[in-house]
Image (cartoon, rainbow, N blue to C red; front, side, top):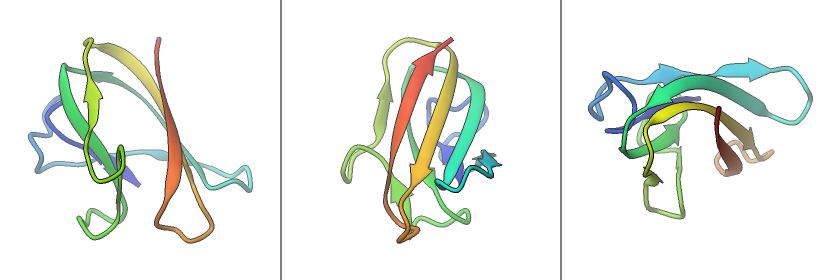
Length: 87
């Protein structure tokens, strides 16, 4: 899993930033990164076929800063939940 979008520095919707898999048995991925004001999505295997956002929409970042993003992927490998906490 990775993040991509206008809020991810250097991404511009064409370059992914990989997340780190946490072997906790829950399908958890974590990334501590700077984010700009803008939008992003989580996506699997650098492919637009499997993404996680706010429903079909992107995730908005309204305040630039350093964030910890935690993504928990469901057993289906296509859906999940996330948290975005400003550090």
